[in-house]
Image (tube, rainbow, N blue to C red; front, side, top):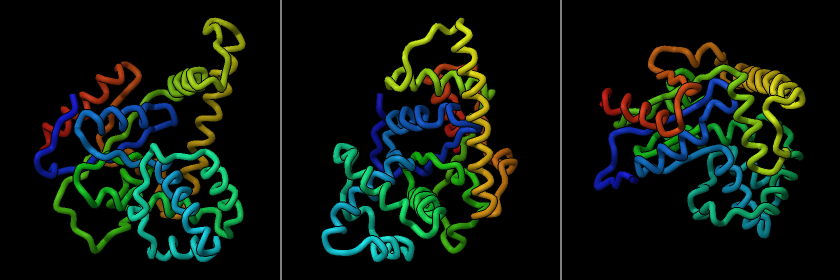
Length: 248
């Protein structure tokens, strides 16, 4: 049952996964529904910007639009984007424009900034790798929050993440169903595990260059680690809620 909020809650939540497939997106979705919070994640932000660009391109050029966003003169909320407004063609058109960007890291930083800005408000569940290091990267050193931000790192062995990634691709129709005992499936697990690790390390190389933060920083004190390999999705969510209620 979704918890109704009569007043603003005294906290927000940021979640990241040790590896892709650790349960970040599913946990954030379920937690937001259970708490009655708003969920913010990179995919939604990209879609919202794609929606805004479709409107703005009728009256401005791409360079002006990009510069406006970069300089913080762009109010994304004013476009009233909802997930039901999602248009695949608009997203493809936006991605085409992104390829023309002179600074490949610019839009990653823009998405990170909007994710972190969401944490300045209570009642938010945010998915963001750099979000758990909000205080370390000091994006908003002059802003003092009146609410807590609970930071969670979901952990599991990369092999487990690989199984989950494959399962999701099968459910999405990207892969055909496979016999889990077959050599082809086991080979795919090994390949996906390697790809998962390499992708994750490449992400952190980028964060090191942009923000001066390291992968080891996600294991700092104040970031609650939740092991997901031996838990159902509901158990993971309940574990997070138990930690929050204990610390409030």
